[in-house]
Figure 1 (cartoon, protein in one colour):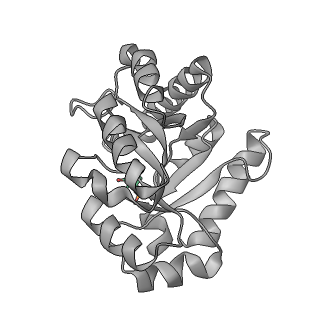
Figure 2 (cartoon, protein in one colour; figure 1 turned 120 degrees about the vertical axis):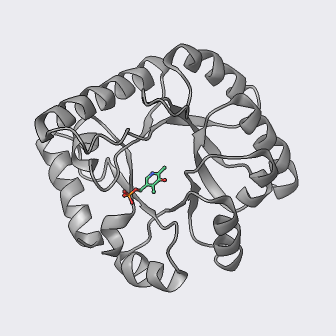
Length: 216
Ligand SMILES: *Cc1c(COP(=O)(O)O)cnc(C)c1O
């Protein structure tokens, strides 16, 4: 696969779902990739936001290339907030303290990133906010002054399931997340990765985070 093929897949899924062309945007996930590979496999095809999941790696790459549109998609520890200086969107707010720390650091940056709230995906491993916590967390994050644009979901690994079952579970998880965003009045929906982005676009994803498929 390559970036143009992934884009074609996104466009096709938009069309099938009756969505306007370009309503689902690609975020190129570049964690673990050298900037040389990013130029060759991503930027050669156009300007795309670059999604990094490890804070130190983001710090190093974005310091050298501050003019790229950097997104942070990983889990955020307090002592790493300072590395988000060049980021325009944080996809992965899991607790209001993270937004408070970003808002505070942003005072010295002169700009603040927008944020998405990460939704828990039902897996045993605890990442993201429970459905019952969402509206309270939204209010607390908004109170920091940061702009909350939407929700983010990282789908669980269901690769052991037979395809129809796996797709059924993903569809319902994506649909639940879309409904939650709608109920909260949030427009952006960050969901879908290399293995499942057509299903995510079908369910209304506006930001699709694809990594591996761009670089193989
Ligand atoms: C790595 C990563 C992706 C991209 O996954 P691929 O399978 O490489 O497409 C998307 N979202 C998050 C949060 C990631 O960490």
